[in-house]
Image 1 (cartoon, rainbow, N blue to C red):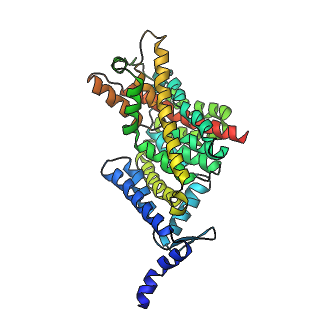
Image 2 (cartoon, rainbow, N blue to C red):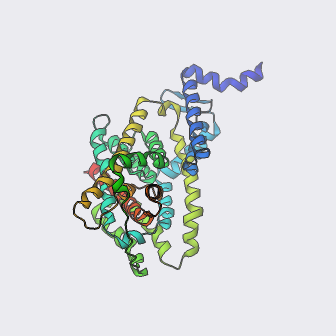
Image 3 (spheres, rainbow, N blue to C red):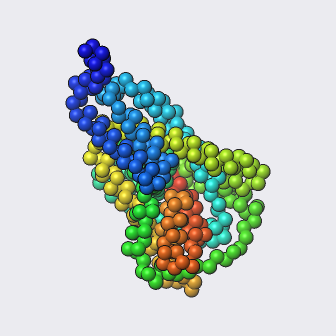
Length: 385
């Protein structure tokens, strides 16, 4: 009898402190299970969703209670994830910044440099961020509203950076929404694109001008962009700097082994740790609130309108261009690299099996990666002002 009491003592103490918490924790187990299911069965960003789902279960095991506003935990995993969160995210956003080095090493800016006008689509695809900021301000404090709006960029590291810098109270929901919508790009974007375009527009073929980009241009590009962003959006320099540093490693030609390591080992390792560390904020007592559902809805709103903005600017440009642009590539202006580019290419091939839009879509996609970071910096500058 004493053994049974000892085994169940944490659960008994937790129920005495908060009788409803055990039910909330069970609900978080279900949410964690859904994330694991999507990662394994649907292959939706498994390197992110699987550790997030398992971490959500870890931090909601019995033995964690919120007593007098303070978390009292007998769960060893809870304390481990707490330390990881403090080191990797809470103090200087270390993990998102390091991840940006790996992302930068993956990105080939060649398609963008061959067609600089694609930066227009990357900028237009941030429309939903600022529209959602205005809408979110009706429901949340301005700092929280700004943090929620950045979900529309579909850029997890930028969302984390902005939310942490602005000390948002809803960082858990913001993180989960940002990464969830990144994973759901193949489900959400096709519906939005089809609603905004006609079949005739989706059948437009685009030619690649094929102009080679010199090695000197590729090396100078990340350096110049970093300097320019330093003047335009100083608060984004750390993000854009690490992103461009990763790209410089790729393009310099003398650090091939480091570039390969950054693209594969570093990016995957940090992504796994980031996913399970984010789960520390998915504690039942804080995550299961009505505000979480509202944040998920506002994040979806921002994401949809970012896609809409990119498509519509392409349709507007076609009014003045002799060589028409397939408006679907505008949707790739969100930051979800390279998923958004692949989705657009797949949709083009579905309409016409000889319509290859990948290079154009990737060019827009990498411009969206840069534009989303600048948008995050502009929001931080605006809030500081």
